[in-house]
Image (tube, rainbow, N blue to C red; front, top):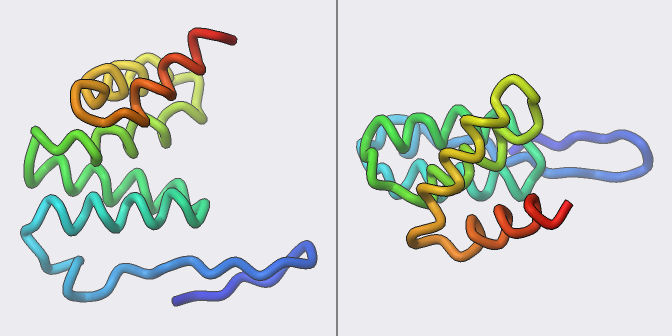
Length: 104
């Protein structure tokens, strides 16, 4: 775990264990991507979610995380919506995110 000190706060950013890096489990990678997303490490969350989807195209949690991370860039916004729409079939948070975006 790496600690970041700045602006008066401490943020612990989880680092992928070598076991997850070597894992062929899509679920392990998507779980890690969720932790990275919650920790605010969007770049790592995007990379890990992409790896989870390489391992299983049907991993809706990874698709959700990828969609959320892609929202931050106007160039990838339409891809983000596509991933969120696909994830919404089984991830309530994806549907809620889409609803919130439509309400804006």
